Length: 366
Picture 1 (tube, rainbow, N blue to C red):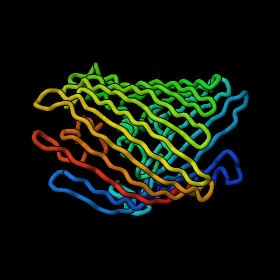
Picture 2: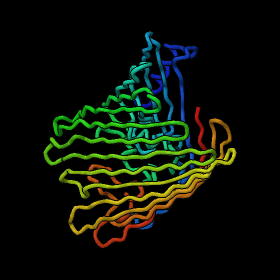
Picture 3: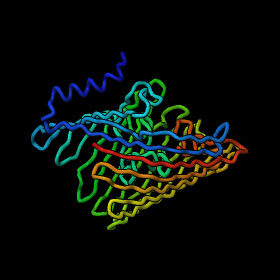
Picture 4: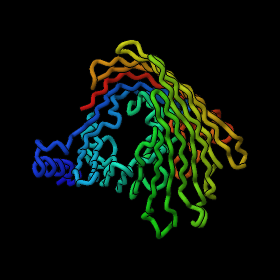
């Protein structure tokens, strides 16, 4: 019996059977993004590489619920599960589904909301807010227009934080503040409890934000602090939008190959009826620690056309390319590498390589 496969179905049965579909405070929402991806890596470790595959980018189904407790207080929850429609065995992970954001919380009309469980950080959420092609195969974080702090799940500053409490304030004339705090479960080998703070301002077509987070690892022998901060924003005027952000991270751990990484990108969109053109360009630079390595960098850019077929369905096609210097393939021993460079040959005397991708896909929300 595959317990992992049965678990989502069991949860669905409990929610739908116990609460009833007629109840307005429980909703089922989902996301499907199916694309064909043709990629080519020039300078791949071992040999050059290229392939064409179908990719289901963060396809998921979730259960969202709330209960009015009176006096302006509401109980809220979310149970979200990710799956791969192309690989019945999960595309490399155990079981057919893995968990995404899953949390329980309280929301007040005057003081905001507190949620506890597995939850996306403000750092990740603000990055998603300025990405018009978020959760597609050529999204900004997948093409390293945004850093790997927007990706993954875990307890060390990944985009989705386990064992975490997150607070978000209400809007005070467009200003919102928030933060998260993670209780690290690996206390036998380390003594760090990551946390982060974020602030944003939104008014009409203007959005600006700033974030800071750290793994608070200075008390752990040999580990050191890993920290990151960023500023960014978006401006919308009629059919045009421009957006971008600047990120700077530092790694003081003794095993890290680089002291830090800076990543920035700028982009824009133009909308014509149901059609939109998206283009973005970004760069990243790593500060290496001796060992014969110099400071090196990568560049990356994307252009995508999107056609909106309905409120919930759209199709798109695009091209993306990245050029990576040598040694950009794995600058952090803790896995915070550069997504578009991680498969490219590194080391002294090599010249890095290119990562290019063509894609065409369809996105549907329900």
